[in-house]
Amino acid sequence: MRLDDKSQKAAYRALYTTEHYHRDIEFHGKINIVRDLNPDLIGLLLLSLAELRLDRFGRSSIIDLKLEGTEKLEEKLSERWFSLLNELKGWLYENM
Image (cartoon, rainbow, N blue to C red):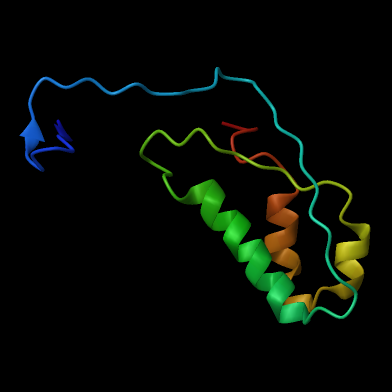
């Protein structure tokens, strides 16, 4: 169902259009971190990426991410975040 904009009621038998990407399509991006950023904020960024990856886990999630080229990030990161960073360096579904 969807809401009919004019009447603000449910419109039965209404079809939605969806956009989807085929499997094995990769998108590449880059995150730049400013010099004096608090290391704990970097940790929160890592937690956000982990949440993006695991949000729909068990409900047919199709999002996976892998961090590469993290040498500069490791210099700024506090030690308590290293285990999460190491988990994000590999594909979640690689060994399944």
